[in-house]
Image (cartoon, rainbow, N blue to C red; front, side):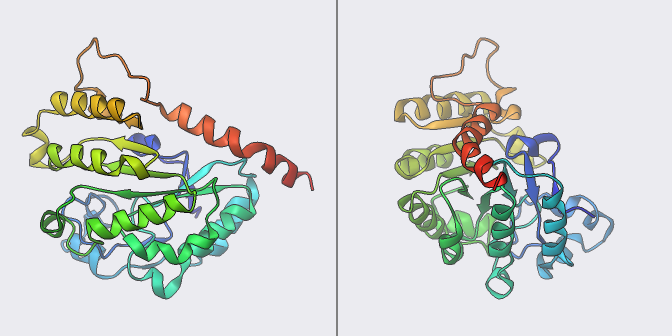
Length: 278
């Protein structure tokens, strides 16, 4: 079974390809949707099963190598991860994320990390290139709020520390503002992190009672206006755009999935073409 795959639905807005090299995640985020999908959803203890026993997928590195051999990467970024976290605590033991990045590079792919693991990612900084990307999910700048929703994830300050380290190393950075639990907190995150973040990907919260209590039109317009005023690139997810006025016009700094991917591949492709012809 392939481990390198094309994301479907909303996930495709984040990346053209993805790898989930662990099963389960110990961060215990209250809003996590993964326990509600197969294979976990069929268990009466789905959330505990998912959070309590994360482990490496069987033969994942060997299978990834087989997958990558089928098609040269030509600079496509592969996201880690949608249904797990690449820098949850068990990665310190297994170091699988480092291995995945190395295999991707070997076959012409770039890596992009999406994690709440904070500074745990820094021990792999040496394997990242300027064609890769590092991202973190941020829901709040408050430790107390983060502990309520993401009790075992890195603190907001630790995640910011990691983003800053990758930014200083010249690695492209982005922040996922999804889920949005508190619109005011999300706006503060944009304002505070814009100097060290290259791109904000802004969504909402789904499949949760909060979804129906937040004025998404107001939040979406405020987020776009703030990003424009700060001169920072931003992407509005489709389900947030659905709430904007019919006459909404994208600003100068708003980007599309196609623009993000074309820019990244254009930067990397000449080098990869040379390598593939060696």
